[in-house]
Length: 128
Length: 128
Length: 128
Length: 128
Image 1 (tube, chains in turn green, purple, red, yellow):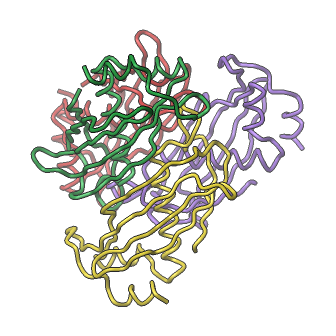
Image 2 (image 1 turned 30 degrees about the vertical axis):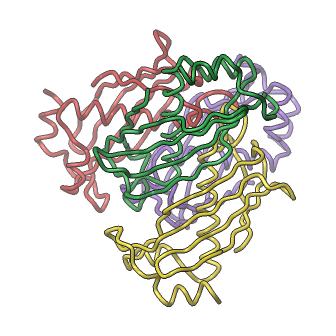
Image 3 (image 1 turned 90 degrees about the vertical axis):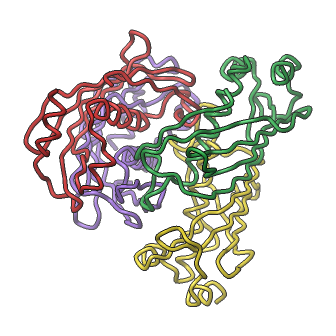
């Protein structure tokens, strides 16, 4: 799912009247999860096998604030695939307007948080 | 620790300009944890032994809203101790004013979420 | 909308492996908002007119824990309508199993958090 | 306050057993607020005058996961001051170990989210 919709409720906002800046990282996680699911990759099943994708870096830019009752559209794409890591580029939009953009690097790790090569089966699904 | 202090930041509030109602349950958890720690009960150590205290019921009343930059004082006491459960009464105050009060019932469970008697060692620490 | 669906992501859970107890209050808010919207009541528009529904009391019981990747179904109904207040009863289910139930009392207030009668137009929409 | 302490509770963690990645942005906000307060800058008073510092960009790197019951130490410093913006560098540590580091750019804006020069009085306090 390259497009993920997110409706904004009171718990998403702060007393500045806008979406709290940390909360966008939750929506980015949700959108990545659904993107991977659409590719046939189930993070819950992977976790049972001791394979996790953990966030190594986020570079996020805030342009326009989201507000209560907005419906946001999150567009996700994978921009890089390496041996042990993945890079997502995501944009959060309200209609045509880009509110937030983010580049997120995820690393494939074991239960002990040791980096491990992304299983070939996953790489194949990602590039299909 | 019968008194626990909590400072309110933007992430605690919502676009209504006040503390979001669900967030008080986080502060209640923090205050209970510190109350138990002051009695010599370490929830992290208990979890390693497969003993958890999970919330069964919360009855929470909101009187006056908390706001950004408030410093709140949470007063906690145990009002009931049974075989497998505990009851806390907690009040969240701003100076002399009571903002929120809550009665929380916790049940002692195993790793499988099965109710189990509160270990005697814990009961003794609670009543000391 | 009497039924509201909520998918559980990592940010909804805690290190106990289950949905964090305060987070259910967020889903209850989302479900009430959508319930009211389906009745033609738009909380954002009301706030502009200085009318807010604030939570006065929540009595919530946790039976079975929700978990990562669950899709929960929240069933909402209004069980009482008074001059200045409303009562919701809500149940959070995973398939046929009830995980959580909650009774929430909301009070109609002005911008100054003063209780005020629920506007007749709203009462009519609620009972339609 | 160049050092800010943060204790980790269940609501800070996720089902992966570690602190959820978005939550660190909350602690970074708390630490920046206390840093500014120690310099005599009160964000609540500034907001009343229509002056806000909003986050424009965060570049955050996660090295080692924080865990339940950790006490984290957040070290903050301002690394750049421009006409309308500020840059913070912050490090989140557990004892000597750096878990997370982040560079955050804040922009001074009016009530309408229009960039505006940082008031001279603020700049003086920052450099004192």
